[in-house]
Length: 107
Image (cartoon, rainbow, N blue to C red; front, side, top):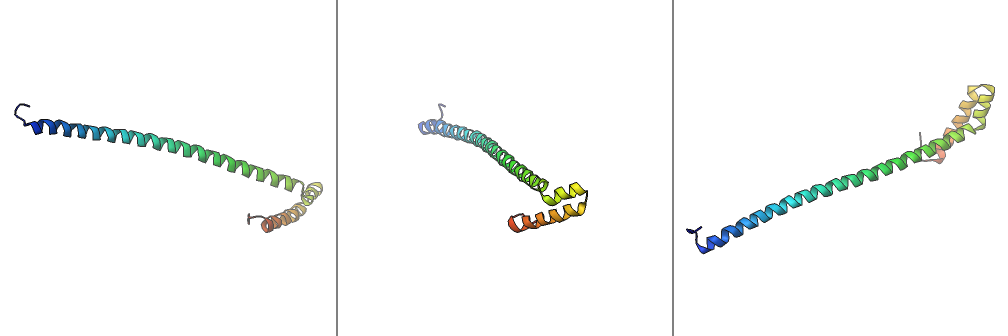
């Protein structure tokens, strides 16, 4: 360091400390971004799992309601009583037409 001028003796350590500082900031930013990204993914995963669970519960409730409705249908009960499939087909056809007319489910 004896051969360096005063300005070089100041500038070289200053530039080196700036470069080291920038590298530390970049490393810190990179690790922080990775951590935040993982947290966001975990949070979104939990949110989607709750949504899926609620949707499945809703489908279960609809299926249960439909099963109860079909089981209490007079034509279906008559078909079971007389062992005649035609009664059940008639009753379920009326039920399907009613669902198509009064719900957003068109199939």
